[in-house]
Image (cartoon, rainbow, N blue to C red; front, side):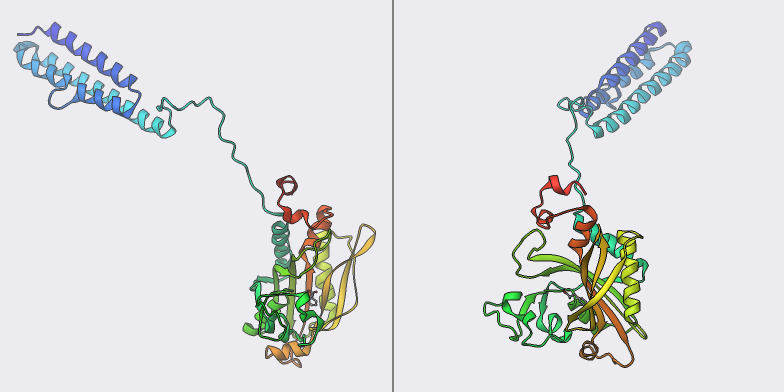
Length: 340
Ligand code: PHE
């Protein structure tokens, strides 16, 4: 026989030991070992004390039984709370003795969007508000889209191998060659080939010309092409759109002007300037789409008119940010790039 006092003492010791062990467990393995020691179904210490219940005298059994249940619940609770603490802590690595949480964290370097890309995003936004949707075309082009459909004949100096990056070794104009597009006007053709008027699109992307790099030239740069085709589009429509664009991108007090020029794919053709820092700065070519271009894509030039423009993205970006050398944009020096 075991006296009720002895039994209760035993129970108390068991509870204290179990709570201490579960509370101090520093890893899932240690906690699991403690669970087996105290709560193990076959030879756990709780099981052993439970077995002694048979040796308690009949009168003391109810008290013994109640205490047994109370201690069982207390031990289970201590285990449960250790378990949930352990799973949340080990997720944070706090139980890992190798982990020193007083060390400074890894310094993640935050990158930035390149100034040209930022400019392109802003241009898409501004032109979007004027109803122009962005469209894109390939950088490797054929002569039809880069020249022929744009009314640039075979013997035109713009097709000279020295003015273009032809992709074949022969590099001979008129040979059905591919080339890196020299202008985004190619996308005018691609758009009109697949869409009927009315059209209001812009196309932004890279163009390539074998220029020697200097502060204002680079063999690759970006253009924003605009194309609007509808009934009754005139030079006045073009000028309005260019003025709205300049106002939105550069500010309300920036006037623009157009002056006569020549492009094979527009008639009349103009050069557009804006007034910036006390002088007129050229921002691109533009004009009324030549009827021959409409014929090349199967539009009726008697029914539709349109305008097109091509602006240099780098120049717009440089003017706005006071950048004086286009080459800085492509050197990818982070000391330069992180200013934008
Ligand atoms: N494509 C011409 C250029 O690269 C610009 C331009 C576009 C002119 C559209 C007129 C109309 O210089």
